[in-house]
Image (cartoon, rainbow, N blue to C red; front, top):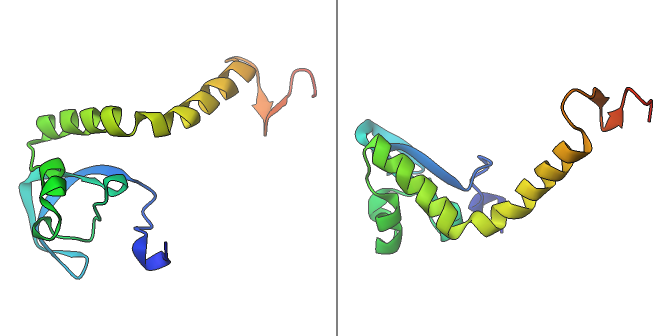
Length: 115
């Protein structure tokens, strides 16, 4: 994958206000009152206009009202991307277990025991 293929935004799934249209990767004409779900892991790209993506991706995108969009985001991530997030979640759990609350640490070192 080249740099031009990457969004560079650091996210893979996002719920955002739907632009009126996207031209050359930039929103033009303001935004609608609707929201859309953009999932790069499913092959969507945030620089593409709704009309430029495949029907499958249009179905994922919506549009949604905000509450329905949040629900769609949660459903989408839990159905299609939960396995990918599991290793990162397990790592966070392991770090929390290694450093229980109330123990001061600095860069992974336990300050109470000077380790």
